[in-house]
Length: 214
Image (cartoon, rainbow, N blue to C red):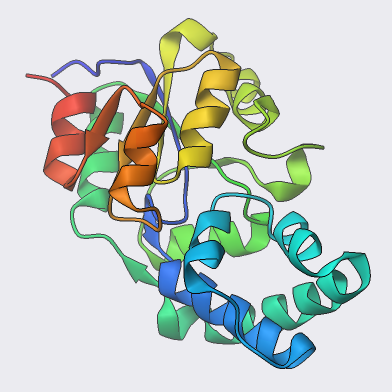
């Protein structure tokens, strides 16, 4: 089989690694710790895919946001191995894409160390191209995706971005890339439909059919 696109960039959280419960639990711990109460879970889920520090500063302001960031990261690191999960079929899909000649890589807003840890824990054979520290702006800004392509020596016309959140679709569009969305992450399907990705996949097999058409 020949990949539909020779270069495939992936989001990480909610796309390749099931970190949603870990992320939501870490946010709620930080909010209880810093402001004494939990936050609306739907709003937290809407932040997944964006910069963690930007989300917390946007919700609480710079001073409390920075305190919540420290609380979040401390709790997250202590509970990653307990709460992270893999998605069935994803490791095999990545191996098959590579075997078919696709160049693959991860572009995420997650910090590099926890992103690499998540990739290892989920048994994924894929390089981390761009993490939070690697670019000055984050999704929906196109620069993370463009930096990923630059590192691969690839052109926009060769590539696609696969993610689970509306912000992934918008970032791809801003970079000039088509976007393929999956629905097993944090975002409601209706929110994904509202930003009109090229394709929406409810299962890994559907994603395989889009990326590796027979």
